[in-house]
Image 1 (cartoon, one colour):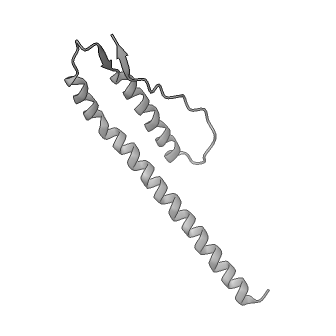
Image 2 (cartoon, one colour):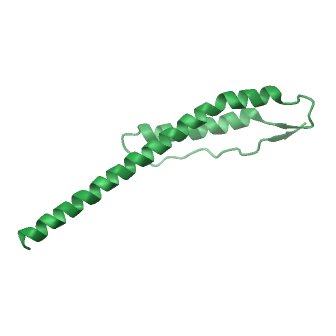
Length: 101
Protein backbone atom coordinates (compact mmCIF):
# COMPACT_ATOMS: atom_id res chain seq x y z
CA UNK A 1 0.00 0.00 0.00
CA UNK A 2 1.48 3.31 -0.94
CA UNK A 3 1.58 6.19 1.48
CA UNK A 4 -0.81 8.15 -0.79
CA UNK A 5 -3.48 5.42 -0.58
CA UNK A 6 -2.98 5.17 3.18
CA UNK A 7 -3.42 8.94 3.60
CA UNK A 8 -6.56 8.97 1.44
CA UNK A 9 -7.98 6.06 3.40
CA UNK A 10 -7.17 7.80 6.69
CA UNK A 11 -8.80 11.07 5.55
CA UNK A 12 -11.86 9.19 4.32
CA UNK A 13 -12.28 7.41 7.63
CA UNK A 14 -11.85 10.69 9.48
CA UNK A 15 -14.55 12.36 7.42
CA UNK A 16 -16.88 9.41 7.89
CA UNK A 17 -16.41 9.32 11.68
CA UNK A 18 -16.83 13.11 12.04
CA UNK A 19 -20.05 12.89 10.03
CA UNK A 20 -21.25 10.14 12.36
CA UNK A 21 -20.50 12.30 15.40
CA UNK A 22 -22.29 15.26 13.79
CA UNK A 23 -25.30 13.05 13.04
CA UNK A 24 -25.34 11.86 16.66
CA UNK A 25 -25.16 15.46 17.89
CA UNK A 26 -28.00 16.52 15.58
CA UNK A 27 -30.12 13.59 16.74
CA UNK A 28 -29.45 14.37 20.40
CA UNK A 29 -30.35 18.03 19.83
CA UNK A 30 -33.65 17.03 18.21
CA UNK A 31 -34.48 14.60 21.01
CA UNK A 32 -33.71 17.27 23.61
CA UNK A 33 -36.03 19.64 21.77
CA UNK A 34 -38.80 17.02 21.79
CA UNK A 35 -38.40 16.69 25.58
CA UNK A 36 -38.68 20.49 25.95
CA UNK A 37 -41.76 20.55 23.72
CA UNK A 38 -43.38 17.90 25.92
CA UNK A 39 -42.63 20.12 28.94
CA UNK A 40 -44.27 23.03 27.10
CA UNK A 41 -47.48 21.01 26.75
CA UNK A 42 -48.18 21.08 30.52
CA UNK A 43 -49.86 24.52 30.57
CA UNK A 44 -51.87 23.68 27.44
CA UNK A 45 -53.10 20.46 29.04
CA UNK A 46 -53.97 22.33 32.25
CA UNK A 47 -55.91 24.95 30.24
CA UNK A 48 -57.76 22.30 28.25
CA UNK A 49 -58.69 20.47 31.43
CA UNK A 50 -60.01 23.73 32.86
CA UNK A 51 -62.22 24.16 29.79
CA UNK A 52 -63.62 20.62 29.95
CA UNK A 53 -67.33 20.19 30.58
CA UNK A 54 -67.63 18.31 33.90
CA UNK A 55 -71.12 17.13 32.91
CA UNK A 56 -70.04 15.64 29.57
CA UNK A 57 -70.93 11.98 29.01
CA UNK A 58 -67.51 11.30 27.49
CA UNK A 59 -64.56 13.00 29.15
CA UNK A 60 -60.93 13.17 28.14
CA UNK A 61 -58.63 11.51 30.68
CA UNK A 62 -56.00 14.19 31.28
CA UNK A 63 -54.32 12.17 34.01
CA UNK A 64 -53.54 9.36 31.57
CA UNK A 65 -52.27 11.85 29.01
CA UNK A 66 -49.94 13.47 31.56
CA UNK A 67 -48.71 10.04 32.66
CA UNK A 68 -47.96 8.94 29.08
CA UNK A 69 -46.16 12.19 28.28
CA UNK A 70 -44.13 11.86 31.50
CA UNK A 71 -43.17 8.32 30.42
CA UNK A 72 -42.00 9.54 27.00
CA UNK A 73 -40.16 12.51 28.53
CA UNK A 74 -38.41 10.26 31.06
CA UNK A 75 -37.37 7.87 28.29
CA UNK A 76 -35.91 10.73 26.25
CA UNK A 77 -34.04 12.14 29.23
CA UNK A 78 -32.72 8.72 30.23
CA UNK A 79 -31.44 8.22 26.69
CA UNK A 80 -29.88 11.67 26.51
CA UNK A 81 -28.24 11.41 29.95
CA UNK A 82 -27.05 7.81 29.64
CA UNK A 83 -23.29 7.37 29.62
CA UNK A 84 -23.80 4.25 27.59
CA UNK A 85 -26.91 2.89 26.01
CA UNK A 86 -28.17 -0.27 27.67
CA UNK A 87 -31.33 -2.17 26.79
CA UNK A 88 -34.21 -1.79 29.20
CA UNK A 89 -37.89 -2.49 29.43
CA UNK A 90 -40.12 0.48 28.71
CA UNK A 91 -43.62 0.45 30.17
CA UNK A 92 -46.37 0.52 27.54
CA UNK A 93 -48.30 3.73 26.96
CA UNK A 94 -51.96 3.65 27.90
CA UNK A 95 -53.14 5.54 24.83
CA UNK A 96 -56.82 5.42 25.83
CA UNK A 97 -57.92 8.94 26.70
CA UNK A 98 -61.70 8.81 26.28
CA UNK A 99 -63.50 8.08 29.53
CA UNK A 100 -67.21 7.18 29.49
CA UNK A 101 -69.10 8.40 32.54
